[in-house]
Length: 273
Picture (cartoon, helix red, strand yellow):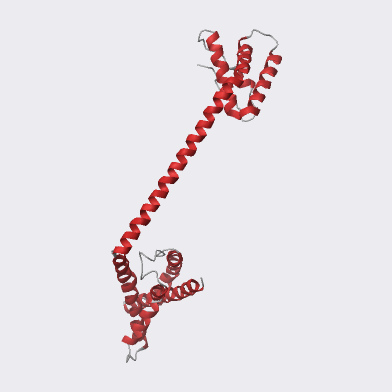
């Protein structure tokens, strides 16, 4: 953990230095092209915000790479080592050193700084864009890396398939339990369904008593199996009514009687087909 923290600090320093070198080269190029300082500062004002956003995104990606990627040591025997990680994050600083060595004997401060900055940019580009991808590709071509990668991908695929099977088995188990519950409810709810069917078709002027009796049956169904049980009981009662009335359409008063019981809500135009 301490090594990772040190690598992150080194990478922050090297990245900040890399951005400063880029800014110095761009500023020097603008000045040599004849741009005034106010033009340089006006461009840098917007550029600082863009650079900060890019640095934040870049550091986030690199930190994830240092902490989580290249962690398969068999597939990446070189790039997964701490020594390579230290070399990678310190590349801008090593480029600065190379630029300094290349500018030995230069007496002009601006040219010396330019050589140092160009050394930083050149070495960083060479290592990060060319050398590191090539090394990673060569590592993946090793027999041990290819075999381990194939096994790892196969294990991941098998794990996904197993999770999918577990979800399907769980769904099938839930559906089976629901079907079993409905069958058991059918026997238990038959007398109540017949009572509801009688209340639907009875020519009774005491509507308040009829509704109270229907509400009591609905509450009992809700306590037994919730909304699913209530739907099953309602469908059974409607089916009994249609059978007794020779498949004639039946006005679904049950839906209105049960409005407000548990999750049961009135749906407009509740006429049984």
